[in-house]
Length: 379
Image 1 (tube, helix red, strand yellow):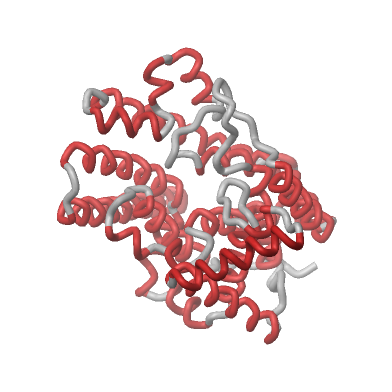
Image 2 (cartoon, one colour):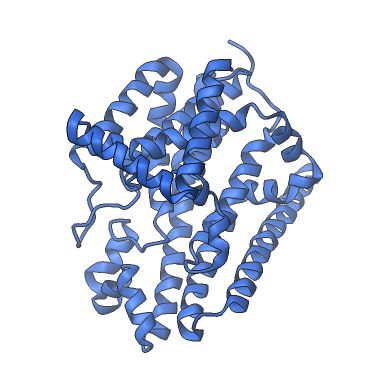
């Protein structure tokens, strides 16, 4: 078996950092700046990219313990990471709750609290606070980390299967994705029976694809070889999706065509619709095609490793604190927009300041990391 790769692939950090910026912008809805994020140029958005890259990062970081049959303490590292994520997610949710409790007197904020699934916790702390801590009650715009926590809890088993039976794992993952979408199998919530918006039964397919990709990178190979015909298909689908989203006439014609496929050929909605919660096929195909296209761009590798991409790569290296800060700032910006009313200048200032804070948080984390390494080297 080839030795694991030791050189860091900065493309993963760069693209994850870019996804974090776009997630922050998208989580402040109603600004002109959300028109420039990836969801306006394809069927998928930054969330799909983030989960796929999280799987790749997990394969890269945790894969060696499984490739080399390491001790169980190393194989269970994803569980420790899941605990860290939980320890960040819960305080973030409590901070959001405090923000809305302080501003709930405004009718617009009260309406937003209902829309964001925050109002039930404010109205009835018991049993909603324990449910919030148990991840069975979630706030809109703060529901990606629970998905990642569940996926990390499953990661040791997924990694073990990925090393021994990668094709069987991918086939099983696709089967679960298809059945979840076909029969609308939801990951349950409590006390309200809504189901998770980011349904782990469906979104696991991206995480598994990422794990297999990360393991391949660790072994110095590609999961999918570069084929001219496959690249042409991927480019074609990415460009079609961009035109579809941007040109209303194309979207109308395409939507009608998908309806005809369902009406006359009986294709299920998972094949012909765009539901995000169950990650329906057009969204899944788009993010996979986009990832395949990006993986062969030589300019991306140079950009990510060079000074031009250093900032976004730094965000990606410290994705958890950056995401947590972005979530808090996005909620604060949402409340500020309601209290202050529509304003292009305010929107621009908040988006710019928020992105600046993301970089500040990453810079502080980078400095802390350097100091810890220096202290360990001096010990």
